[in-house]
Length: 465
Image 1 (spheres, rainbow, N blue to C red):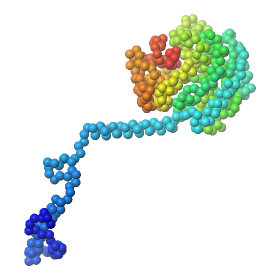
Image 2: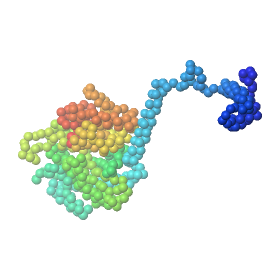
Image 3: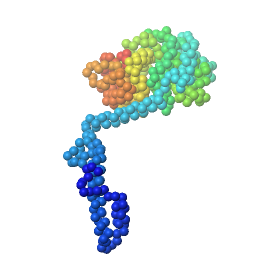
Image 4: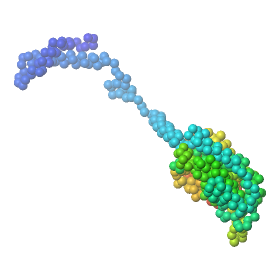
């Protein structure tokens, strides 16, 4: 074979066999003649085998990166650079981010409630039936306070078999108050709040759907914002709405009762909870509330600022000095501005595609945690709810920075998770008393005291509990 050392030859098969047999037959003692001759054969074979092995190694192709020399031993080895490390870190972060987004999608898939879907078709059918009944309410001629109370008692007993009166606020009407009240079917009935906006979420207690019933403007007079007059007339409408719903087919599916909006005795509502017999509705855990409202031009909104006094103390106590009534004024403005707020949230949703999903996440978070400073202020105000945190999110998305006040501003192009994180960070850092949140200037609320969140119209403080 070419390349072998001169004088060396490859041992034959017979020689190899003889050599192996001799090895196995060796015993202790002096070597025999055959052993000595075999030693020569061993030397020849070892030399031949060694040369053969070297030749074979030299003839074999080397793998990439292999080098027997010390100088070039690292030439084929891959070098790890900073760019490689950064790429691995980014890949890890991207994986974690994508996994978290999948978890968020799964969470919303379990708790989000979508209107006009297969899962809520029973709720939508009930809402349509409620709307039909409210629009069919009978008109009531003007009555005195006592006559109106007796009228409701008679109607309730005849329609439902249960006697209930008018849920007047506290303080109740003074004896001999010269106030005449009438009632009529609402001009419009609309589903409002989180449900039609796609922000409703199901909790352990179910979810709530709000129905706005706009009372006719003709039922009110110009100065009804004074001395609880509006609230007395509102209470009559609520009582007659309950009579109508409880005495109809709606009352066969729902338990109909009075409830208080945000615990405020000035704001009674009609609340409907599914009966056990209505299995599919009960399984959804849907509570429906009928919220009265009035057109924005019925009440003198300019007179409902935080410094205005709209309750004459002499009528209800011995005190003669008039003081500001910010909570009273906020309750009045809230009824007049509900459609304005709904329109603003609709516009925000159109400008920010992920707004509804982010608001839904905030509602889930709100149901679990209120430890952040801003969230605790909202809780202490007595007005904490999904609507308030949704308005805060809308302010972050749409309100431009002004007045040099530092605060988070979120882009309408962000996804739901980014909007949610930005809103939670804002609530954790913002002091609503030291740095009021305002849409526009709304300077009238600068010295209101306590937590301040001025609504999109600039007319009322949403945190005036």
